[in-house]
Image (spheres, rainbow, N blue to C red):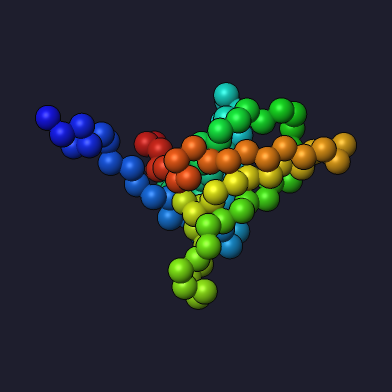
Length: 103
């Protein structure tokens, strides 16, 4: 049996990083970022657990193939959290993809 055929399909998160009104929060386990706007819900899994409460989040994206294409969250490759005390923590993304989550 082909093992790849048994794996579930992963949908890309099509939320645009330039969109406003996206609700962003850490997952309960602090190992991912949840994104939601209207009916679109996504998770960016992280390769580390976020320590502390971040005051800001910066996303590093993969190089875009075409400059006029709006960057989307499935292109995030690394996330840097900045904390109120000036400290920072950087996490990579697991699988380098954000995934759609069921409602």
